[in-house]
Image 1 (cartoon, rainbow, N blue to C red):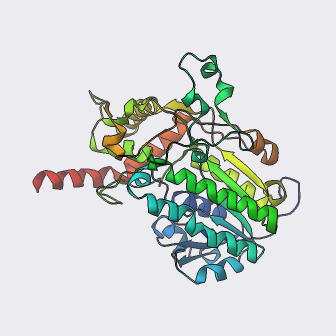
Image 2: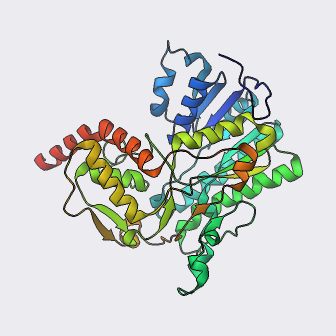
Length: 385
């Protein structure tokens, strides 16, 4: 393999990457990227390895460059030793499913703040670079949520752009436990930033804006708990696989942007390999061109799923449900989230490439191929029991 060069034309040294949460959605795609396109090695830390098992099989040309360590970072003394062995630490560990924010607020706060503190401390103490995954939810509600409906600012797209170094972070009241996740994520960001300012921690913070692709979340009752509620794409995919109407929370009026996981992973690799350009920065990673309402997303997913599966469009494609019914007490939401891309374009030259239609077609093809038979068997068993 030819020598890899960074954005400044310098040869990239082989790195040992300690990846915490390597067995998840983002981690599995990042592991593939590192194994298939670089010579870097990975210390993969997680409690599950299903999504990276194909990389761990003996005999694969990359199997000697990835080691899986079954470690629960809550209470495992091996964590600091693995961090000491690395050149850079990527922390992906988190509870990041909206349904859990109301029903498991303590677990959410501990997972996203308390459990992350030792990782930050070990990186500071051992002079290791940290790439920490946060969330676009740290921005909370947009200011537009508090403006009169006739305000001219509501019609100005620039007013909704979320900027890493300027936008305020506005959350709902304490009783709206949905914000437990965002608050925990923001507080760990502030801790990391303070460690950088006071103790010279080299850090990069990533704020993902709805990364979508194969292996995202789980299909309830097939490869996850039967009563679980995954994020929007897996929820809608489950409905489509079962031939059920897609459930729109509060009418699906909220607007979101979506970016393809493979585009987003390109950005992460640039951060790993260009520390001089990435250190001490917070990066939005999203695609402002792929903005839709949740209802529009549901209708587009239905159209694409019918195309890839050959099934007929349902007579009733969607049904409305209240947020209280779907998520329980304490749910709240933001109306719109559009990432400003100025900083990541300036520092890393990164731009997303994949359209919303194309990323959904790729993802739904995977969902149908992977899950349709198992879902049909599950439905058949429920009818006969």
